[in-house]
Image: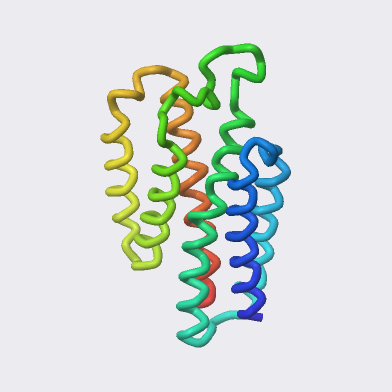
Length: 173
């Protein structure tokens, strides 16, 4: 069963990479739902499987970080798209590419840092990661659309990373 968890996490990471490479063509919320279903199935299997050997638990941790980093972008983008007021005709919504430029790279690094702190057993590290991100974007967050994009993107990204790591932690027993 542990191998199934590794495969599902690997498929989640690969699907995230493919969706990211496809760019605009995958902006459907169903892509994010599919990734979430893969992660949920991996979580259920990991929960049922119980503790794994040290090697498999380590492999699951590495694969979980890959899934967090690679598949978190499509998930965060889908959340931002679902909340986009530009769809209702309001300009400058959270999907505006000029708001918070570099967010995709920052999000990937954020998910890696969130996953690493949780795997290291240091939830206090989450505070540091999110504080550094907030301080780095502080000057840009005065615009309401930027603040909305920051909050939604950060929460979606951090929750996705925590979910991926949670699957790996289930195998630690």
